[in-house]
Image 1 (cartoon, rainbow, N blue to C red):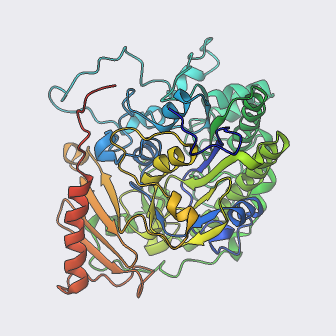
Image 2 (image 1 turned 90 degrees about the vertical axis):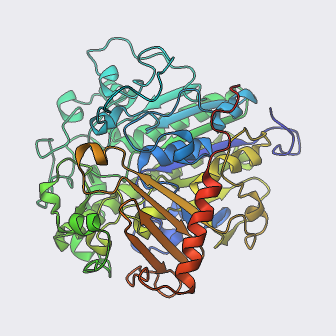
Image 3 (image 1 turned 90 degrees about the horizontal axis):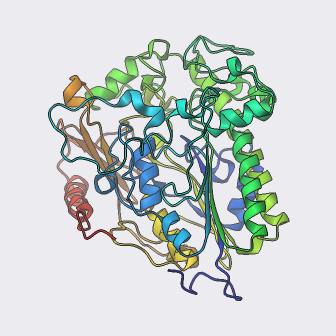
Length: 528
């Protein structure tokens, strides 16, 4: 239940606006030092809040880390280890706690707490399951795209989705429309043959300037794009909830800038590929790196098995085109964020609204000769941007370590709502009060690929990484290691894992401590 700790002087609970992008690197925003991409609205938000310059994911894959952000629990605790299983319907979340405390709660855009768009990643497990679900059939199909197509007359009735009492999904990426987003675009005059399209070279385009099908300008009006859907429907919710006089929480979750890289209309030409600077580590030979990384590096994006398959930066021109298109998508998001923040001010909620901006993971974008994400524990996929602006808190910047695991307890702390059992993250509120404060000494990153053994994959089934202020150590289930001194080698080029020195011993010991600390004592605890 709510307490008065998070209320303003009149006892009113603060609102919460959670802005989330998908697959945005920490350095792909102006307030983190990028001088090419233009993000004036996000930069203004950062100037009024606290910028966490040293924020890392708990898992570099969509579903596990999104489930972590909403539960405050590691993937090994909440059970979403990969994109092939949905979050347990009974899992406690910060929206559930806020709803119980009297909040209106909404999710607009990409959820990916259920594996609807990732159904093709599920591999049938051999033998009988470890346990049977007592939920009615269909509980984990609320994000299945087919349930929202026009030939389905009735949309699913959802009044409690992991604590959100209102949801409007944008399920897919790029120029592919599904969920409530598809219905919305059709009502605005969009054509089904331009919206419900395949992931592949057969998708209709207005223009394609390079050989990789994943970079193109879509044929529809830019107003129909997912970013504008999220902005319009988020502002509508804020207006409605504010008129009711109740505190509200809304997650505005943009499917971009995740690939396919399809900035619509004028946003496609915001940047010229030839002007994009290639990453300094593009030619990293990955000597001594884990085998799967070297294999990924050799694999051309022109021959991907599917649109999410990790691949190599084998063509510098493709890398430049990818960066240019990604910047266009980010600038459209920034424009949408400006509209949402303007709505918060217009309804008179600016002074009592907590605003969080982050992303679920990053993208290699050519660094170390790699593209996209997946089982690549470099800074490009593991580090994300984070800004928290809260009423009564002075703006600032901090180098304090933070994890996406910490967002759930931080939101509960700021709103004065008591935490629930099993939260493994740590509140970042002390850092909001003092940027020099330290709430954690390390961040643990989990990364599992459960189908690995069943399909005979060369990708390791398990990888664990521990990150400190000065180092990153990774080890996988094949016994392969990487160790980097992040102070002396921020680009992660000189692997020190073969050296039995003080840094190596310290990081291996810390990995053991982190794994012990991550063991979930709330597992199988009494159910509420």
